Length: 326
Image (cartoon, rainbow, N blue to C red; front, side, top):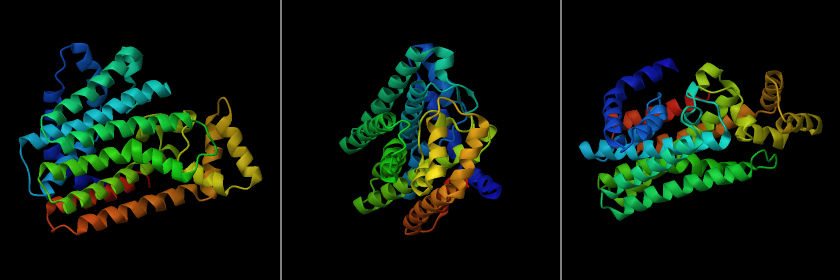
């Protein structure tokens, strides 16, 4: 959907520029090595969706000042920290089309830089002197860690259920996007009802983004994905298209799927065979339908706000999130 992407980019570019400046200004570690290792991923082309949502939700509630931009960097620092740690745990090779941080700086430095970013996010949250915001940011950090641990313990488990998968992505991705939207409302001093609505919008949007990301592992090319196609599966991560197809497959097809999944290595041909089986059982279409349901709910929530450009942008972001996995 290039027209949607282009229109959305035109709307958000000024905010993205302010966020980019704030990320540079708020990183400021004492050691240059920390700046280099953190910047290797932070400034490697991320979309800045999470801090953008924080800014837009505050604006939707009638609040906008320089501190909101500064505060928004919290969610990007948290996101980057989890990616740095994930890549070490998964022994990944490529992230956003370039070598992962631990391949350049080593695993010990990368892990500690991730820890630094978590601490920096909490330090910025503390500057609000708002116990509720500090609690939310702390809970997001805790939930993301638990989601990663839960995913790690179920690595390669062909019995992973859809509900268990949903719980993992809710913790890994949903909570952070939900928190970005909710804290935007809190910074604006919005009523509890408005805060809840934006939190719910963020939850549904977070689910869409993660499901769309998981779909890309089966539908995108390496150049688009920024990492090798099939990387999630090679790391033992079972996602919704595969989980659904496994639950529907007959004995022969399911046996073949398990052989590919549990094999010590699998070729590009094996992966393409697996994708065909998944698609034949409706795994990709089913995942797209689940994502569409979350988009519909997110847009319904936003449509209840007074119509303005910010509301329109937030609605477009929901459509864009879905288009990525289509």
